[in-house]
Length: 336
Image 1 (cartoon, rainbow, N blue to C red):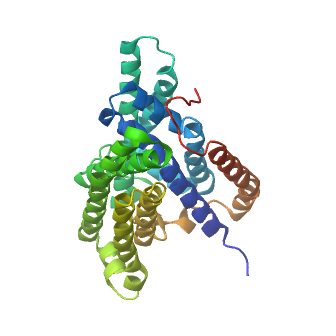
Image 2: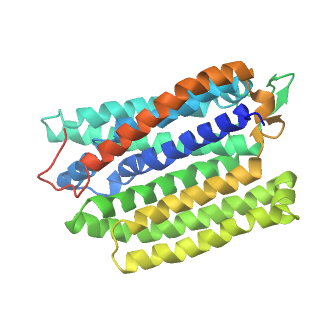
Image 3: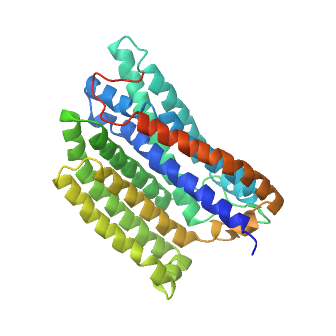
């Protein structure tokens, strides 16, 4: 039996996108939490906690976008025109944020550093919000006629996409707070514990609202989630989210350090699985499947040969960096 290269590439790109969300999510969450941490020493520790890994985290965004362009060109040329505005704003915010990340350590004046801190935070908010908007617009569906985008310039801007934008900002803030619980100590860690509880509750509420809204807005989603046999596949997801929420609450009560972060990642993973159940096998909902959007099998095989070499190298390097900079970050430590 021959391999389904299209399915392999769909799983690979989906994995890359999730790794980006998980790894750059807490990174963006640090910037989102800046307004809640006004002390310069606390902000220095927050930035230093992600300094060794923040640029490497964005590698997965490149793999996801590049893989989409190379392997699913039809999806690329329909999704990009539909989401030009939020995606361009997201990329500009990431660039702006990266500059601010470096420049805040170069400023010798308090006023200069304050403005770069604001730029770092604003870039984090805009990038996270635009990612959520793009996700919401994609889930709602993209109008396609004759293998080309047939919608308008503002189709991406809807109440649902704004809701998903807010949800992703809150979810990233939760990841950032849980990352600080794991990587810091003292008063900063205590503040992170205090923030994690309401952020966790808000994230769960938003997950529930978005899930119910998707069922109301889309008949195919309702059929997939509420009819047999689809309900057998989807039912474990909300149950697992509920169990994970209880474990998250207990980890905060017990002042555990790594478990809140793992639970927060679990919320994202289960939400991602639920999204996959809702959309499968469409890569451009509601009409274009992964097989319809894929390039020729020979091209997929050629690209997969390179991915088999490069992806393990990236994973190995990423694992090494996280291991090398393990442990707590203190005001006395730094990587800048």
